[in-house]
Image (cartoon, rainbow, N blue to C red; front, top):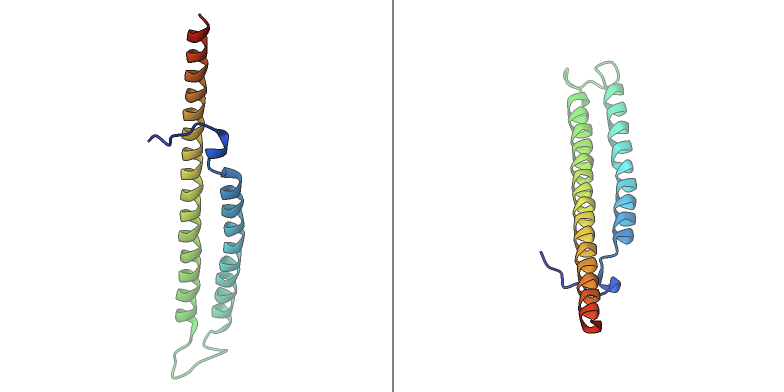
Length: 113
């Protein structure tokens, strides 16, 4: 894919993207902490602690904890994909810019000869 890069100012700001991805991943730690706390609540809500007609909240809480963890993992996967794509685009843009500079140098050399 050609980006039409002719100056460094046109390159994507990978550092900002990387920092944003990192901050997003940090926020996903809260999801994982929540999943852990729900799992701990499930362990406490056994038949001895909370029982209505022989049923407990334990299975529902276990499932909820797993769903929270799954969401966090899915979001982390997406953030990783964004980061990988940003690296790929940045590298392609840098290659394109270097090729542009090389063409300019060759044109200048041809004019000088």
